[in-house]
Each structure stands twice: as structure tokens, then as C-alpha cells.
Length: 273
Figure 1 (cartoon, one colour):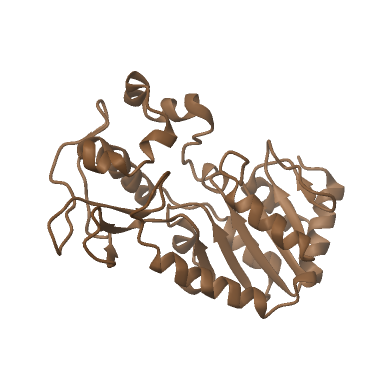
Figure 2 (spheres, rainbow, N blue to C red):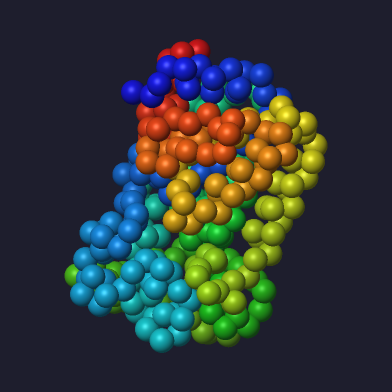
């Protein structure tokens, strides 16, 4: 159980805040049952066939596979798409709504699973900095259009981590489609949707007093530090950072560190109301 003093300080910061920013990383989904890809072993435990190929997450999350070996690329992303659809988000967002009452809320996330929307947040209060698996784009790309993956279903043989059926195609040129996700070394990512989200996020920040902003950061690790950097940048500008992370809760001076999982921490804060 988290240290009572940290929980009390967090609750006080939320209570005195004018607005709340929810910043989330991969750890947010672990409490819903999504796999933790922390390190090669964690990734290979989730995708055993890729161990035999010697492929790490950083290598699979590379757009070149869609051109060189598209059945492998869609084996990986097709499985993840189905996994995210079949996994019910935990009730952390609902608990957070109780904690913040009527205060304005905006979410900044590196997750691509669409679970914040599924938990009730709207497109207009969300910044998905790495894009979303729920949208597709052309691999070429032949144009700057993206489209919903709602009707996309990819059959996958998980013994090989390969797609076995028809692959998604661009409706304009017929090339292989890919998720509208910012991958490693990705020069073909179509970023218009993410950019529009980012503009709304910064407009929201410009409309509040950052000294009265409480950031609740959940499950954002140092391996992909995008979310932590954003939190700490706002902290330097006066915001209060509540960092919830079972392994990496440390932060700059002034950080309220809760060394526990996200859902457990939110439930403990709810209990202290």
C-alpha cells in the first residue's frame, strides 16, 4: 500500500487544482490485463515466435516490416488490434472523474490502444502523441488521408505471429495499409490527426494557470520517456506532478511519488475522499 503522506499530498493537490492533466504510459493498461513489454524478455513472453527470430519490440515497431515482410508486420499489429478490442479498460478513469469532480480534464498519452476513449474520454480532451492503432493509413503513403480500423479484422496464426488472411489495403491505391502509429524511424507517419489533438491540448494549457494544474501521471516509464518529459516540462512551469509508477516513481524535486500501480493508487485516493 502506498505511503499515506504521499496519498494525502496527492489528494490535496487535486483538491486545490484548477484543472487536471492525466498523463499515461503503458503501465495504465497493465491493470486491464494488457501485456507489459518491459525489456526483451517481457516482449518475447507475449510473442514467443519473435524470440526465435531475435526480434525485439523496437524492431517490430518499425515501418520497414510492412514493406519487407507484411504478413509478419500484420501478424504483430493485427493481434494487438484484436487484443485491445477484446480487453475492457479498468475503471480508473471513472474513479479519476470522482476525484476531480467538475474540474477540466485533458489526457496526454503514449498509448495506442484507444482505451481512454473506451473509458469515456472524448476525442477533444485527448492527445495520443504516438497515434492510434484504431486508425489506418497507406504505407506509401499515396495521400494524407487516414481511415478508421473499425471494419478491419486480420486473421493471425500466433504460432508464427503471421497474418494468414487478406491484409488491409489502401482504398485509394491498393498498397498495403498500416496503423496510423508513430513507429521507430518512421518517416511515413501521417500526423495530421495527432497534430490537431496536440493543438487542442496546447490551447487547453494556455487557458489555465499552470501553477494550479495537477498532473496525474500513471505508468509512464523511462524506456520511452515521451510522457515523463512532458510532465516534467509542465512541472518546471509551475504544475504539480503526481507520478504513479510501481518501479519508476522518482522525479524532480517537488514530485509527489506513489510507488504503486495506477488502479490501486486511484482506488486508495478514492477511499480517502
